[in-house]
Image (cartoon, rainbow, N blue to C red; front, side, top):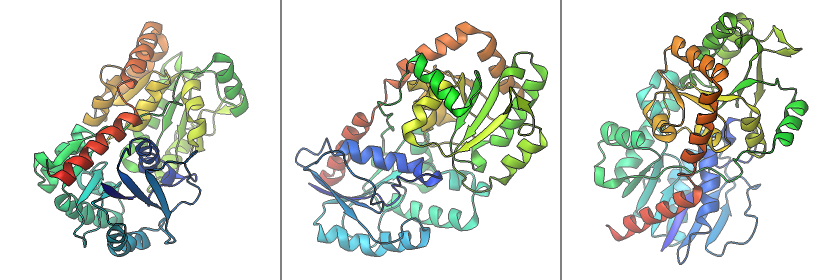
Length: 388
């Protein structure tokens, strides 16, 4: 079997384009390279910095010259050059790793759909982005022999919003890298000192964009800090690349006095920007707790990474986050500030709760691996090609 993979959204550079679906592309390709066993995979990538650490005979990387970082040239490439490339490579199957397939080809397709936030929450997206995602994803899902959904929530959305039959939708969860694990205390202390971090802080990691519900987080944190004796000594780190419509986040932090105020010489809320993956486990380990108040998610990879690092998690009650977290997090209604403040108070005053969350999180994270994701993806390939 020969599989052609569209990985144009894989980025190794910083910024929000290097997070989210780029992590999926990078980790899946790396894991697939060890699972080929008679399958030839040709992956088209645009980022020439991406390399495998050693040779994988069943995996070939082809680097495109199109400016894939820009949506319009990338879409043109996907819909014109990719169909020709798939035929030239004599592919039995083409896999679109992020929401879209080439529509003008007879080569059967598999598409991974990460979420339908652009359909379910259209007001949170720029108009053009919302339009092309909605149209191309819908057409791709209907054309595909198999749709890979990264959660049961996403699978249900694909069936409901796009009318795709259940038999063609497969749930394949994301994995978590082995680098996300509890680290030695001395290493964590040294990292806190190096980065100028407070002894106790809450951490958020994710793109700065509307559906992440960050104004809600800032308001709840500011009120809790003002009312709780223990909260006055706790900082907040909001980390992630700038996505879109993010200006409100910084303006609100200033308005609430969270950036001008000082705690031990530091801002109460820090915005370090995009965090490289090589440092992420240190950030998770250094935090007293991880908070993820998102209004809508397809999967919620940062929640899984935090649990794997042994960090207690507070997250919203969106269905996909509940799938990922199971019983290993404090789960609160996405719009309930009072419940979020109570979760903060519980985490910092009840040591037993924090200890139990760490243990449950580590256990829950063991259910997810990129090796498992790759194996199940290969099973989907077999099903799509053989028509099972």
